[in-house]
Each structure stands twice: as C-alpha cells, then as structure tokens.
Length: 211
Image (tube, rainbow, N blue to C red; front, side):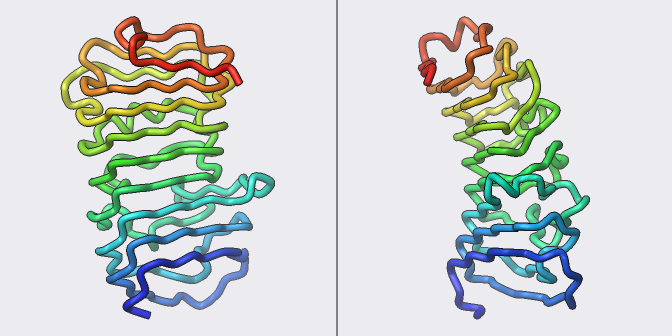
C-alpha cells in the first residue's frame, strides 16, 4: 500500500466510521469522488502525501451539492493540503460556495480548475497570491458573481499565463487593474453571453466562443 502511486476513491457515505490513518508517501495522483453530503471523508485521514502531484475532487453533476473545501459539512483537513508541497495540479468539481484562505491551499500549484463550485465571491482575490500558478480555468457554475476583479501589482498572479472562463452565465465584467497578470498570454472566453467588459490590454490575447 505504501508503494501506491495512483488512487481513485469513490462513493463516500454519510455514515460515521472509525477513523483510519493512511500513509501514502509515494502517491502521485489522487481522485476523490464523493457522493453524499457528509462531514467525513470515508473515515480516512491521509498522512505523508509528500509525493502527491495531482488531486481531483469531483462529483456527478446530479450530486454536486457537496461542500468540500469548507470545513462544513465535509472536512477536507484529512488531506493536509498546505503540506502537499509537490502538488501541482488541482481540480475541484464540487459545490463549495467559498474558497478557503490562502494558507489552506497547496503552496506550489501551477494549474487549478474550478467547476460547479458556485463561488459567491470572486476567486481571484484569493488565488492571485499563489506564486507559481500558470493556468487557471473557471468552468461551468464555478462563480455566480457579475464581476471578476483582479487588483494590480507585480505580486498578483505573477506567473499566470492562461486564464480560461467558460459558461459563467452571470458574469458581466472582467476587470484587471494596472499591472495585474503581467505574464498573461492567453484569455479564453466560452459561452459567457453576458460578459461585455474586457480590459483593453487583454483584447489582443482573447479568444471568444459563443457556443
């Protein structure tokens, strides 16, 4: 078990089970597929995920109303994400409503995908401080606000090269203050029919698809 490199866990139940400590120092990818809204992660507490490079937490669209990164109702602390220093790719496809604080996220992420999270506040205000993030994808129902604002400054998304915004039906404005996203090379906007405001300095790197 300690030599396991790839793991898929599916079908968490809402039953309380005895806690089990799991040490997987060689695990490189972990895919969690919760089904029920629950305060428990199948009774598992992960230790020593020092080799983890890719983590996906997704649920079926019909069962998407599950809180993952908030400590209520589902507690993500058994994963100890801040200690996963080798984690580079994170994909979240579950109902969250709010992102956690920066110190609750993996510090060395290079790619982040959000989908069905239904965030009520712009995720950029938290994510802009991730120093190595290069690719950010905001997919279907990831954000319910009308504005996405990224404040300026060289320390805000210092490495971000690709921003993809897909199927955000509420979105009307994308605002980037002077100096924000200094290395952005690609902005992809797909099926965001209400989005009418895009920063002028991004127009030459923007592709827009209506459907």
